[in-house]
Length: 278
Image 1 (cartoon, rainbow, N blue to C red):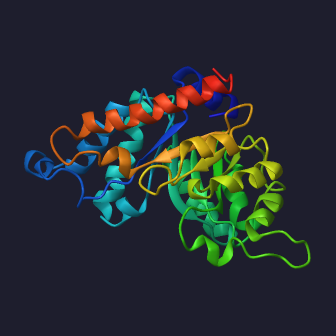
Image 2 (image 1 turned 180 degrees about the vertical axis):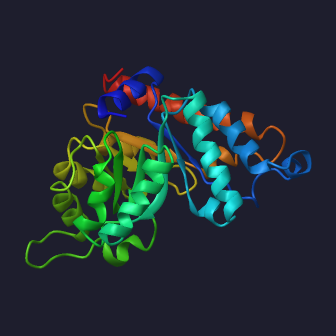
């Protein structure tokens, strides 16, 4: 998917919502296990069907699938295939946080872009260019590079200052990585809980898309994210996971997920209209 196609989806749906498919077997409605031998996939399918017209992206977090072994990988692959077959306009992100020496990264890239039909994969930049570049060899695919994350531990390293340049570590990641990819195949993870810092992020990467986790259960403000992070092509994919997919643990879980997604989409529509992007 191209950057322009992603923006056109945002304009058409009046939404820049990404729904995180962090499917935890301990949190999905218990009755599903009584009614189906395929409870995890049925949960994903129902969530997708209930929210697909309200979002432009889905982000399965691989930890929740890998923890289930072969069954989890099969559910993940079927989930991606289901989205592709039924909602082909969706941008699908593998939240895998990979990144290793070049030949290993090439195998990770083959996994997500060659064998599975993801649009993007989250990648850690710590090992440098040769750990990221294999993911950028696939035409039409994206790297979503970790820059400034929403977790408490982000302060341990990401805000360390380089005495020579004066750059914080995450700023150096943003500046250096622009030599690896472009705003057509690279976006950045910037946490919503650090929304005011998006001003500094936008000063370095004004035209790139940003994947913004932390809205909803983690306490980030959508209004603040848009205030500091919106650009002329929207430039934001705001992720919400738990607040949407676990809105109910009863039989109305899909309807409840839709209600929560609708609340976010309505706010996003207002933001886009205020910015004259729709």
